[in-house]
Image: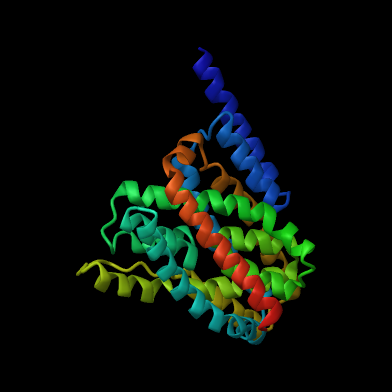
Amino acid sequence: MKDTQYTLISQVLFVVLAIASIFVSPAIALFFGILLALTLGNPYPIFSKKVSKILLQVAVVGLGFNMNLYESLAAGKEGMIFTIVSVIGVMLLGVALGKLMNVHPKNAYLISAGTAICGGSAIAAVAPVIDADEHDTSIALATIFVLNAVALFIFPEIGHLLNMNEQQFGTWAAIAIHDTSSVVGAGAAFGDEALKVATTIKLTRALWIIPLALVSTVIFHAKGKKVSIPWFILLFVLAMVANTYLPLPEALTSAVVGISKRILGLTLFLIGGGLSIATIKTVGAKPLVLGVILWFVISISTVVVIYYCV
């Protein structure tokens, strides 16, 4: 009887918090999800995982209707050189540190890929290519997930402490935060311009999934493995093109963007609901330390480049 009541309470609270997350900031929405997951538990973990992936893609495409193609290309171009250097650098550093720290090679490779490119999406794309087992994949995903949750809370605050403008913060968030969801959430928390810059650079960075997956097939001698391509990025670009060249009513584009931001809040609630005590325990000390070191390296180096090299 108690188990039934407990489940019912968690289900009701899930619905209430999911609705509330539509109307609050991204950080608070994520906090709602994590709070539920670590207390009563997420009553719909499989649903949350599947729906959050779809909603994130819908939200990102919708945000494209608030962006100008020329401005976005300029923002992406500014972050391109450092993207190339950082992707290659993080992969090499992660693999090397993994060997020194005695982290399983495939585990270290996946954590490096998630840090270098776009978090869970990169891990999900590369894992089947290198023939990683479920254990290695889950540890890498859990490591990145924990760091993402932290980043969404602390990055906007650090950005304000460093007196970053929105262009600088958007660039920093896109390169130093792992998952697209947390990048978009942090950008939205900092400002509209930061959101535009962060989204554009992050999605440009996400395209590196393709060459990384192809290179991984050579490194791990994996023939005939399917490479997963993030097709929603094409829809995002098409949305920018439509907003730039078509005479779309401002009321329409504003409504689409507004709804997309609401969807983003719900998405982050569902993502936060995926965290659990079991997930944290699964990570283990060494993979988490490796993930933190790589995260610090890319975060600090990006700040240095933004302030002293741009």
